[in-house]
View 1 (cartoon, rainbow, N blue to C red):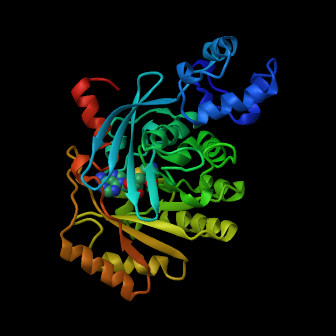
View 2 (view 1 turned 45 degrees about the horizontal axis):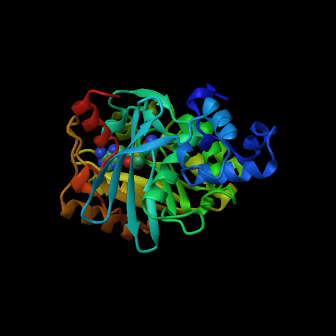
Length: 351
Ligand code: SAH
């Protein structure tokens, strides 16, 4: 376990809590676990005796993250800045849909993958989040949105905030166990998407882990020549290897893989690029999620016009590749990865 001081009760499984509280009556474990999953602070745990609160608070924080700022979008979207125990800031987005509500969470403070279009990576990686800090984002927003553990306001989670989830493999897989635990918030792994820039070894490890989330591959290019310009990870793992690992994931889990593809003007968005992409994905049970690039101030890259989006989609469809355009929600409040945190750091000079 990392430095205990940094951890919160939300980092602990019920079993770990049981070990920690072995000197207390067993029913107290259930009470503490429930309070942690309800995102209660120590002051709100009124059913617990003072000696247990003192014992716990000496060793662990109560909640892992605090909602520091909320930006409300017109479409019901809410964007959050979360404050961590050590003063770092991360961001997340809540998106209501007719089938349920999705929360996009961060897995690292910053990121070291260096993608040319992404704001999260501009200052590199600061640190990994702990499992409890990833879970804490979900628990905090669930309460804010009026949800309970039985009647959840957050029904779906995507690991698409700042960070590369598979670069923080151990904490992310622990998070997947915690979030799907039956006595906790119990969000099914089927309702969780893990998005990766393509860390091949870790995709295979995840496939073998039995944690059957929906895997999303951020591909963004039909050839290695294009991909290595916008995604440095391509120098290590070529597209063919990434797709092989994705096929392995599908074979092991039976879960259809999603391919994320951001359309960037003059880089990857021509009809020729669409045809190459279709050839690449031919015969693979996947679905392409297109998104028009969100402009990031510090980056020169920009998105494409509607005619280019339409032509790209039509070409994919004609080639038999299922695809949809991801609604770009919360555009009015800094919808793209890492933008809000960047702005915040700029304004308040904090990290
Ligand atoms: N590191 C992971 C998850 C975080 S990013 C990954 O690479 O998948 C979540 C998604 O948003 C990725 O597909 C990423 O490529 C995409 N993205 C990042 N910046 C973007 C931008 N400015 N416009 C559109 N999509 C962006």
